[in-house]
Amino acid sequence: MSKYRVAVVSLGYESYETEKEILDPLGAEIVLATRDCLTEQEVIDVAAGADAILVREAPIGARVLDRLDRLKVVARYGVGVDNIDLGRAKEKRIYVANVPGYGTEEVSDHAVALLLACVRTLLVRDRRLREGRFETDIQDPLYRTTGKVLGLIGYGRIGRAFHRKWKGFLPGRVLVFDPYAHDRIPEESGVETTDLDTLLAESDYISIHAPLTPETRHLIDEHGFQRMKRTAVLVNTSRGEIVDEPALVKALQEGTILAAGIDVFEKEPIEKTHPLLALPNAVLTGHVGWYSKDAVRELQTRAAQEIARVFQGQQPICWVNRW
Ligand code: NAD
Image (cartoon, rainbow, N blue to C red; front, side, top):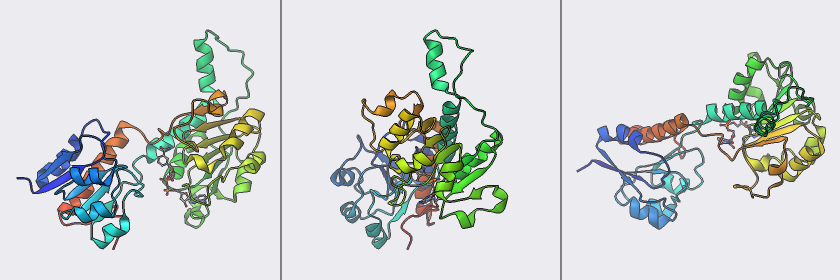
């Protein structure tokens, strides 16, 4: 008879060996749902008698927390915890833990990749070559990256990782707009903090790494695009709603800016008829910035380790509902 029961109520990973390796030695049995739990009742059924829950999107509301009387910890595979009733969990002294920063290297790589794909017109060139057009005499507006001004909107984990990677391209200046971090940015980082309008007007490349909040919704709108250089490239791997999408489409169609690399959209998944899909100066991916096999392994490892900590009488490291 196992000492602990750990219920995985959201599925989607290739295997759960990582969790087993971490939790088995503590005498924990892992119970996998047969399919993704979509309702609280499904969670209650799968997690009956559980000491811990591993969850992605399944709802962990007050009813679940009240019904599972052995529950000690809920670990979220990911960052957002809006599907978990944090207040109720706190009242019941059930730890809620998450895994912040698991995809920092991936998202920053992805943003760099989108920027380079735009700057080197990689996808257009690839398509032309496959159509049998070997064009060495191109006249496209391609410019070198070295010496150009980089603008970062949001200078947290991913923004800083982007900066670290882009340093190798020897940017001219690096401008940062992050009103909540301006005081925390050390002088030796070499960035210039600035207001948004200045960043938009002076940057050649702009990459967005701020969270979606009421303040950042449509932070880049038609007015913002009009301030940008006609040779500017915009990259967004953060959240679609930070950019006013119709204004982005218009800016790309009319040549207000040169190109955009976009991983996130106002409404996901996007419609097959989305106007961005018809634009050759947009490089598009479907919210995959976070993904790599390594990121998934990290996610599974860190979530299971938080549960192991609680079973060993410790507090989780990324403890969300502190008391
Ligand atoms: P973080 O919390 O480490 O950094 C966010 C930064 O944005 C902070 O420094 C904060 O001060 C700043 N900020 C807050 N409000 C701002 C505002 N109004 N204007 C400018 N800056 C502001 O977060 P992170 O780990 O760097 O992630 C950044 C964003 O990336 C997340 O919020 C998420 O939306 C997105 N993300 C996308 C993917 C993907 O797959 N594409 C994956 C993970 C995260």
